[in-house]
Image: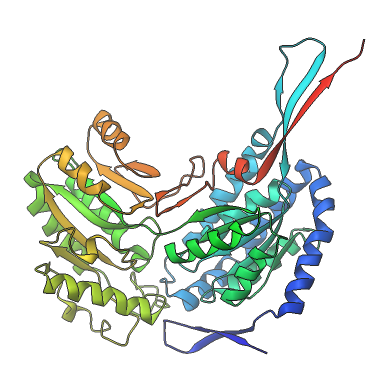
Length: 462
C-alpha cells in the first residue's frame, strides 16, 4: 500500500493521507466507466442538465466546509476561499444553460428530397487531471461540459488537494448521477500516464506545467486520444498614459498578488508608459505593503502561504537572482515576519530596473512577485508583451477601447483584457497559444472538443 500525503502549508502538518490506487483499482475504475458509458450517452440531455444543476446545488450546500478544506490544503485565506464556489457555480450554470444550443444538430435544409445534418456525439471516457491552485474552478472547466456532452469522466486531482475530488464525487452522487459515470482516483504520476497510454481514454484535459503537458502529449500520442492542455503563463499588463491610474494599481495589484500569485492568468510582468510610471510604481508598492501575510484560517488575513515549500523557495530564488542582476526590490520583507527561508509564507514584492534577460521576466514565477518596466510607446509595449514563450492572457489599461482592440490584435495571447485581468468569462473560449497550451475549455467551443461530429446524409424516397 502506497500512501499519498498532503502537507498543509498553513502549519506544515500532514492534513490528508490517502491510499494510491493500484493496478487492480485502476482496472476496475476503467471497467466501471465503460459499463456506464452507453447508458449515460443515451440519457436525454434534459436529464443530464437536471443532474448537473443538482450537483451545483449540492456543492453550494457544503460551501463552508469545502472552503475550509481548500484553505488547509493549499493555503488560500478563509476570507477568500468561499469565492471559488461562486465562480464554480457561475461557470457550471453557464455551461448547463448553453448545452442545448451547443449540442444541437446542425441542419441543412437547402436540398429538397434530402435530410442532412451533423450531430455531436460524445467521445467516451474523458480523463481530467486537475491542479491545486484553483482546485474547483480548474476541474469544473472540464468536468461539467464533458458530462453534459454525454461523456463519462475519470478525475485525478492534485496530491495537494485530494479532498476536492472526493467532494465532486460525493456531490455528483447526491445529485443522482448514475454509478460509474464520474469517478476519481488518487494516482501516482506514472500510473496517470499509463492510463493515458492504455488506449481506453478518449480525451485528456490537463491543467499544469509545460513539462507535464509534454508528458501528457507524448502519452496521448501513443493512442488516438485528443487533448486539451492549459499550461504555463507569464501574463503581461500594459498601463497606457490615459489609464485610470488608481483603478489600474488596485486591479493589477490584485491580479499579481491574489492567491499568493498562484493564478494561471495572474499578472507577472507589467509595462507602464513613461509618463505615469513613477506614480504607478509608488501606488503598487504602497498596495503591496498593505497586505497582511498571516495564518490563512484567520478571517483578517488577505495573503496566505504558498501551497508548497519548494515553489516558495523557487520564488525567493528568482527575486535574489533578479537583484543580483541589477533589479531593485522595493518592498522590505522585514515588514512581513512570516516570510523567511524554510517557510511557505512569501511576501508580495515589486521589482523595478528589470529586463528580459532576467528569469523573473521570462520564466513562470507563480508567486506574489511583479516586475515593472518603463515603456515609451504602444509599439514597445507590444514587442515586450510578445517577447515570451507563453501566451495565456494579456491585459491593457486604457480609456481608449479602439486602442485596446488595435493592440490586442497584435498580441500573441489567448485572451485580451481591457481594464481588468485574472478572470474567466464562461461565455468566452479559455485557450492559450505557444507554451500556454492548446485546445479550448468553457464557451460553446468547449463542446466541440468534447464531442465528435457525425454527418447524416439521408435521401428520401418518394
